[in-house]
Amino acid sequence: MSTEANDLSISLYHEGVATIVERCSLEPALGISPFSYGPTPVQMDPTSFRAFFSNPSFTRLRSYACFGMPSGGDSVLMEIESSVGGPQPCTISYQTSGISWQVWYDCILRGGMAILTAYLSVTNSTDVPYGPAGLRFVVPRGSGYHAFSTQRPVSLRAASTTHVELFTASEIPVYSRTVAPADSMIVLDELYLTNSDDCGLGMELPPGPIRVFQDGPPLLRIDGGTFPFAVPGDEITVRSVPSDDVMLHGGWNYETGIANIHLHNQRAEAVTVQIEETEPASEIEEASHPLHEDPSGGFRYFVVDVPARSTGRLSYRVSKAALERATPPGYQRPPGPAFTMQPVGSDLPNPHLA
Image (tube, rainbow, N blue to C red; front, side):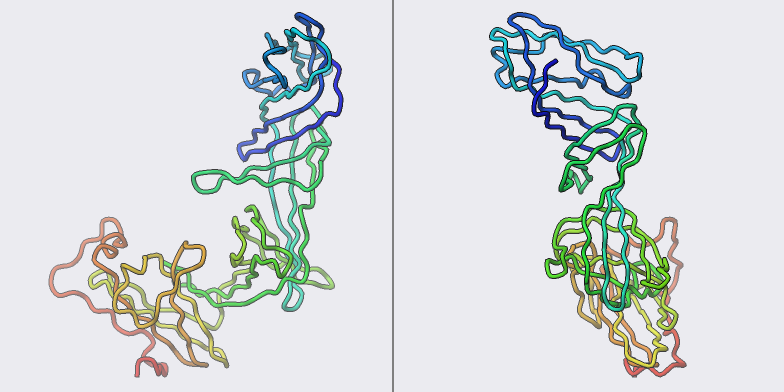
């Protein structure tokens, strides 16, 4: 097989499946010519092999068969039928298992700033090396997929893992907030950054594990978690720990549909708490505070300002339909008058309840 100006690209999927596409030049003789293509991995799906010519009216793949090679891997024996002969552009493609990938992040906190680096790790478990090749990794996104590409070609050695730096963004402002997640009695202190052009981001970012370090010396790992799929403008949490000095009590009453949430702030300064709610605004009634929509559309939240060493309160009612959805399975409402939730922490000064 005569090849010229090979152009190799690999599309990686989460299931450990990869599509290999090679653009090359074949020089078949007039009539029917045999060609051997390889090596190909033993994990290749033989039914996925294709060879396309720029003008299929003159040249086509007549048949092919896969054979094992003594040195490992497989080869594909092709029969090319051509009515013109001579060098012709050809695109060869096939699918194989045995090539997996993972995106991961390192975030280094330095004062009120962060350095964020993204890496791509590709494990080639096959016995065939590839490259240099353009890599494209495909991420499930809702009902579809989103593809990301490396900026430069990458070589994948056989039976090895290759690590590629995707980008590094320095001097990213880091912000803090206090959050009460929906359906939780825990208050979290979070550090987050914004996916914006101003700090060298402002692009779609794939999901993956994240390691968080405090700048040294020495460099100290302080947290870890999962980096979400992020689009420009998203706020990305890089650290989340339970608060030591802001506590939450209360919740929904399944009899009345009323939520009474009490916040206790033991800090020497006022704190603003973001209380998340999964129900849409149309299901919220008689709220003591406005309900805000998260830009990502995933949830809604109330904002409650709590004075220093004091308490704050949020109250609202959910619709009957929302109450039915939120009632735990098997819960039996007792007979008689509805139970009324008693205020929590009434022994603390609470100007909001005065």
